[in-house]
Image (cartoon, rainbow, N blue to C red):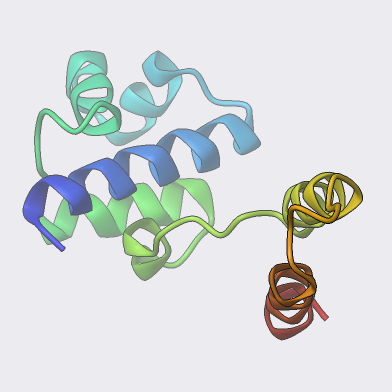
Length: 111
């Protein structure tokens, strides 16, 4: 994983948690006493942040700091829909092994 990957993950998570709390970039920036442009740059992966800023953002959004660095998980409903879609399309051209592999993946990660 590269720094660019981490920035993208942080940005995606920041945006998701900010939206969940119903904060605009401007509102979050106001709470943190930082520039709205800085929030935007974090969300787009253009800038990085200090550990102090990460802790302050986490407190403001009510999550643990490490949550911003975790790759987002695919919601179970999306994965189930994906598997269902391709399992239904399975025909003689798709071996049973592929269908079974998809089902095992679903069971391993979502059951």
